[in-house]
Image (cartoon, one colour):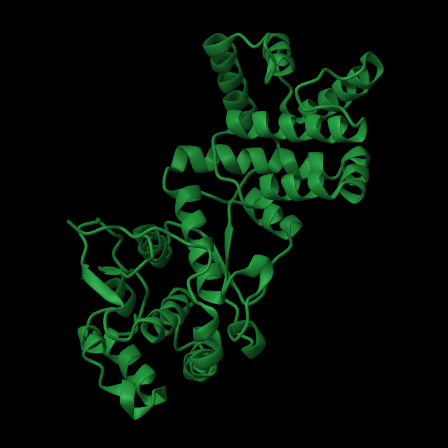
Length: 340
């Protein structure tokens, strides 16, 4: 039985960056030229990008067996063949790697994205192939970037029903660790995994899009902006919620309330399991009410939201009430997403 692979944030080690990073950068240039002239589409470019690093990382066995996942068919017009991509890559490789036996499995006249994604890749989860395939069919609305967007930019895109895929192409990025100590392969893999988590279930995707629309309003509140500028822990947690967390709206709301409460506990130097002083509790509840306003909850759901994350929470009853209110507010929210 094939293993799907478990993702590690760091897929390329220091030795690879030093010794193979320059070669990866060199191999990338021909593909970038084809992409910039329109001969490769975004999905083909992202797939070729992964191919370069996956092959150079494990030239003898970067491909596993054909997996049994049902992937989307490539609906790209004039899809580039696998043998064409193989030829471009081989022309950039040194003689010692050009005729590697592992590469010959790509020597096929069929669509490169479809053929490449039909196989498992060593140490990379199948959700990456699933995202690429769904992207190629138009089912996942993804946007290819060559930069790392800010959390605010990610939230804006998610509120529009989009997810971004960062493909970093500068030589200094390829040859060194980048943001949060990740390598560039780990970076694009991370984004594609999150894309699959975000869009795999259309109902949950729509729910998270609507939550992001509300969060976009909340993030602009003066009180939240002050908290973001004054507490680095709150900033990190809030940015994670904005741009890197996939879940159902009720769990997202619980997380939002928890990080707000954490801010007030740190500000007051209070233990996380200790109650807030009455005056500070009033301040917290006033802010939480302002944060709940975009949902326009009915009174019962509003009271359940106040009980959320407290011993007074009524378990399944409150959860069902909040889930229903969040679902209704999604349909009533004025901003429409582009995800279908």
